[in-house]
Image (spheres, rainbow, N blue to C red):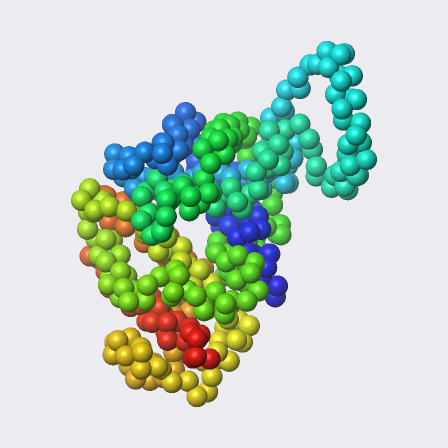
Length: 395
């Protein structure tokens, strides 16, 4: 299968389940029932404010801020889906009246682009779903779906004070204040538009059962956190993962610290940098995508090889493993995906992230055994991936 279409540079519906894609009204209903349109817009402005104010996040529960981010992402996805299949449902954008003089001046000016405009018009005419003049149509022409969602994730990391960045966090993401303000202004209007569409009722939206977008659902296994280059050559991503993404020397202590946060309340009233958890979970998902993809392509066995031997450099890793697992890390990787499917691991990581970011919502001892088992599988997976990653001179 060609997995490039699932890459995060494209525009997949990556935050919705198969059921929600088939019935978009479910998502709108959940968002509307949760809060008023004004309250949702206010939450959006809070996220914007966090980007420009150091430590402002301490006035809020990081878990609630993350929940707002998730709802905005879901709204972006579901409105994209609605616009694709029901392009006439959106609010019409009022046309400005212009004077005859203005019209003539514009015609004279635009005449130099006439050829290009005809080409664009011809190309657009080939798409039967194209409807101009609606808010949703303009919104998704102005904003690339994938990049818009990536930006929201980056803004949240900045707002939650992620410390992993080597230089200024604004320079790191090349953030321009005017661009951020423009995006947030449009998202405020998108929130209002979503509530208006919901008010039209369920019957106004189509039944999308069996539509092609269900392939992108979060409850299906596919590499949704990788860029197209990493999907094309996943071994290259693995090559630099433990050098540039996560420090292997601190994997064990870091993952165990994350585990403890699931049961400890008010962590963020004393600690700092909750944005680092976003970065940690995102990179583990990328690693899961990469290893899964290598196995699907049959490259994992080639990478490990029949004569695989763990390097002496990795003694600290091997000491925590059974000898058989250290000599055959593929066993660990296969058991990881046997314990939970790929998409189930991603859903699990999201659940852990939400719980660990929250000051109040925590796991109880009743489900500790299952959580402990899952964390042990995750640690063993990370260690196995570290053992096989193709450092220089090891291949």
